[in-house]
Amino acid sequence: MRLRVQGLVWVLGAAVATGLAVAVWAWSAQAWRAHLDRAWVAGVLLHGAVTRGAAVPDGVALHPLPPDHPANRQGSVPEAAPGVLVTQLSLLDPVPGAPGRATVLVRLHSPDLRYPVAEVAVANRPEAGLGNVARLLAGYCSDPSVFLRADGAPWIRVEAPGVWGCAAQPPDLRLWAALGLAAVLAIILSQVVEVSAAFSGFATALGASRPGSGAFPVQGPEELRRTVAAVNDYLAEERARLETRALVLSGVSHDLGTPATRLRLRTALIDDPALRTRFDADIDAMTGMIDSVLTYTRAEIGAEPVRELSLTALVESVVADWQDMGRPVSFEPPAAPELETRPGLFGAGSPSRVPVEAARRVLVRGRPLALQRAVANLIDNALKYGRRATVRLRATSDRAVIEVQDEGRALSPEDLARLTDPFTRGTNAGLAPGVGLGLTIVTTIAAQHGGTLDFEQRPQGLCARLVLARG
Image (tube, rainbow, N blue to C red; front, side, top):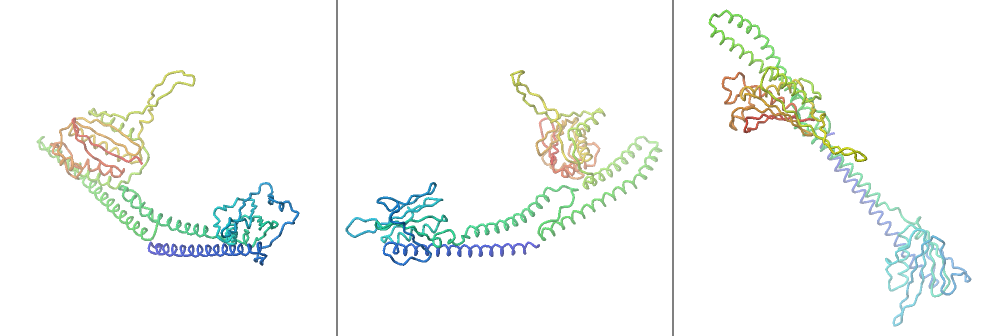
């Protein structure tokens, strides 16, 4: 579905849900107001029926207790069953110029609650007070037993299930309306968050993508699908161009191999040793340049599969190869963390710290051959321009850093900034062999592994730092 259509559906859905919720809420509130008003009117009419013998309101039945009933004795009240909660109040009939006298006694027996009679607004007229009591009863679902006594007359049991009983209450749909509106809004919000997360996830994946990584999954709204498909097509075209470039260079390298071999054979026939040496050097430079360009192009493609590997073992093997050739290369492995041991249960032994050798392994996901080439290039540069190389490996939970320290002379910040440019060499290159692609290849490999290559000028020389992501 298109994002525009989704937005329209969300807006209309929110509007319809809000309208229905407001309508249900208003209807329910109106129904409850009418219910409470009917109860108030019934209470007012009930007061007249009890005190003046007026007509009994509809839905109300009066049952006077027999004169010999214990509740009708002087000062007695109807007894409640065990566990029943009792609420009692008096409605006064004020007489001008004289103290008020009790006109109606109200006694409520409820199995569920004591009624908050403090909320009853006692008006100047006692019938209005009894109407407020009826309104209070109608607001709770309890089915109470109501007893009234007027001016010393016998107690009267009042039955009015159609006025304040649970069955008389209208359905209160206000909570359901609020819950329904919240549910609809939650669904719409979840859809908005899902679409936003799809765009955000694609932006994050695109920013964290590495050369040679696969296509991005096509999902989400139609606009995002088109964008992802266009990006995938562009990446596929770029990869195809890189593969074509590598194929062309590979063919050129192969085709130049035969003339280079013939040139070497013919230079062997040159009697002048100095001239023959210069010819051999030119041929070596030519073939080396072609091989370097081919290596750089293959590194850009990143066709080697990714797998989990021990970076510690990889760096150790590369350093060992240089050491076998008698080159001044050393390796400082990451320090093993230590665990502190405690004395035994009965105090035997003493605290000590034991190194965890297994933690020396730095595991990463990467391309082994590419990483070997990157480390070898850094060591080769250090030996060319700094006489010796000291390799260190450091790691955190999300990054691994390979440092190659040399003992060469200091370079200016401008030279350091240009070291990774293709076919660019430092001012200290001198007569050292090379075409200026070694560090460019390392930078490409670092980018394939979610990292970077940077340099730090230290007192003892230049330090190249290859930073790799461990994820």
